[in-house]
Image (cartoon, rainbow, N blue to C red; front, side, top):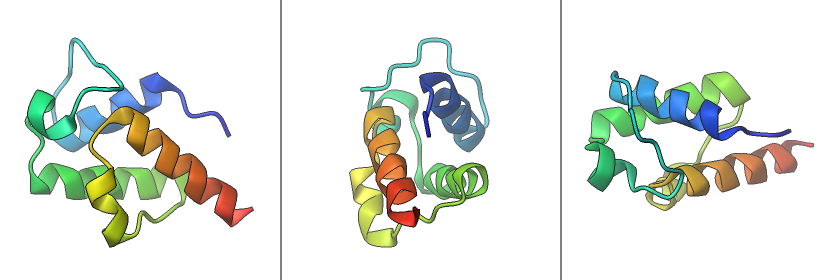
Length: 81
């Protein structure tokens, strides 16, 4: 399954409850976009709904950029097959 950068941007915008003008897949969600713990929970919920995967709690520290999020979702999707 291909995961587009625009999909990741949309998910992050939903998690932050605001639009992001300049989105970078390598930008840190917390430092660059001001994501907090509630935003992180919203991010996980949106990922679970959209891709039908569950990001394990212990993997959450590994999810701070769009690139990392994409890699983990792809890994989890592959494991489901």
